Length: 380
Image 1: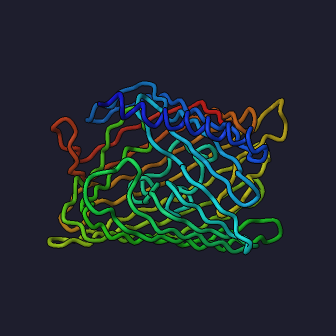
Image 2: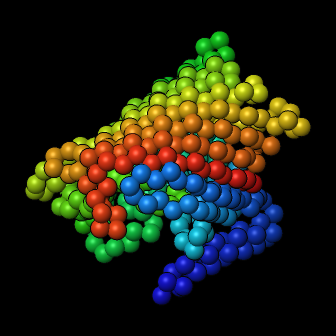
Image 3: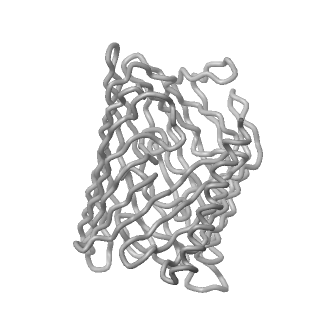
């Protein structure tokens, strides 16, 4: 059964490529291109009390196609096949509107949080911050709208379940939106944004908030609320701010999630991060549609170097739920040989406290490991 479930998305992707190729050849108008990425990690752990395993992880091995059907319609199909697990990524059809905006229908991201919306090919750190990973709603099936004009941007979505979460019962129903204000002052980029997501759980009436310590090769989650049952609604919101001046960017987000239940305590969880990154060789990241883009080396001979530092804080303790508190300090170094090839090194100092999460029958409690994790990545 497992082999069939893992093979089905791969077969669907190959069929999609074949259909798009045939359509392109037959109509001589659609244009689709193959796309993909590879992110390979290796981590060394300075353990505290919980044993964390050193080792490799193919974090992402994605393949897909993206392109246009005609002047108005376009589409994308992408799957991740990392470590014998198959997961759907962006799968949508998109229509450009005469007003300047666009509509997407399919499996897409709920518009919430700058880190979440940004591509993992472009982020200055190996992993997104713990508050983002634990609290933000990511991919869902639904209909989205976005429009960017000058310094203003708006994204909205009506959504249901995740593609892989096909449990029986009525799908959840939710809405999300993100508003952006991003003016330029004397060549300096300001970014301010706010987002929210409201979800009526219906028959999908359980939620769980948890995260690893901003590194993935080991896989153990040191903070975890466990399954919260009897959920009626989940309300999330976030605020963002960033400032770019030449090769330097300062960025921060605050995120929160509240759980409404049919009975029992109703917890509120929250987190935030503050980060800065400096491209030592003087290049400047591009900015478009509410996110910062990739680093393009100014010289192909020397490449580009980037230094980054981030402090993140996640609190999963509230109303009797003891998921734990996790604070991380991450220092990063990136080397770009070209725009789509990068070598990354992060040192993560983790401080977990009051965690009721259990690992192999042992309660985490207070835990302070240090992690050195590296990555080689490319995309096309």
